[in-house]
Length: 150
Image 1: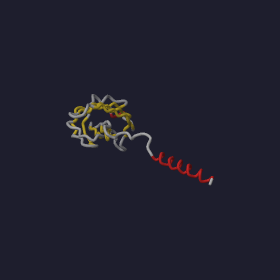
Image 2: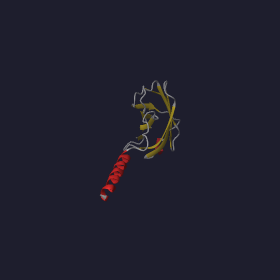
Image 3: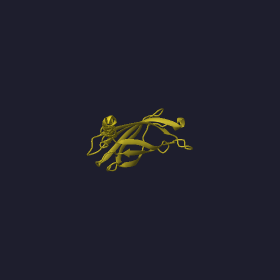
Image 4: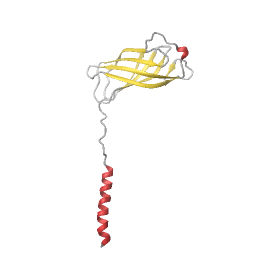
């Protein structure tokens, strides 16, 4: 008889502990309204071309987009990417954009195997707020090609 008066509360405590441990303590972060992500896919300094990946991380369509960027690479002058038209970005769309770069002087003889960079972009559109997107990363030389990076 004495064992049963301890077993019932113990079973009840165990059941409550198991049920409370299955629940989440914090609500999940909303995956809507995340900022746009812009990354370099490839950079060719000989042909002065760049490929960018634009990831629209929002449910709503972004219309009439313009992209302007300034690329700062260690040891080189700033590289401008101006007024690139981007197609309308649907829900969670990812677009690859090709553009030409402008720079006063590119000394491609002193390039290294890896280039740390800062990509500072302004993305404007008709139906979204203007966004400034800053990406810091490193691009690496494509083997066998002197001025091509990815």
